[in-house]
Length: 103
Image (cartoon, rainbow, N blue to C red; front, side, top):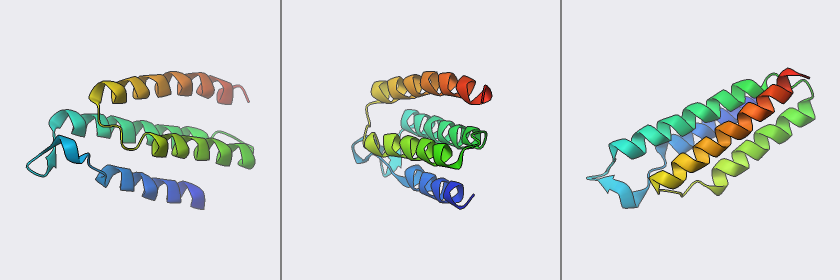
């Protein structure tokens, strides 16, 4: 439970991360704001889904993998690339979720 709370706090850190090259007077563009919101929502969905993993070691590894992937792509500002990564992540999560449901 503590690690989930820590991940949620770190997710909030992502929420405050702004791509400097896409700022309009110090604020995010609407498209960037919407995509960031979708990514954060998806991240929370994954964290909630990880609760269904009974094995604590596997749950931690899954959460760490998700966190590492977010960190790896943290500085991506191209909207098409963000959309692609989000789409790919959702496809992978759907497959993983089916596996988790069968455990």
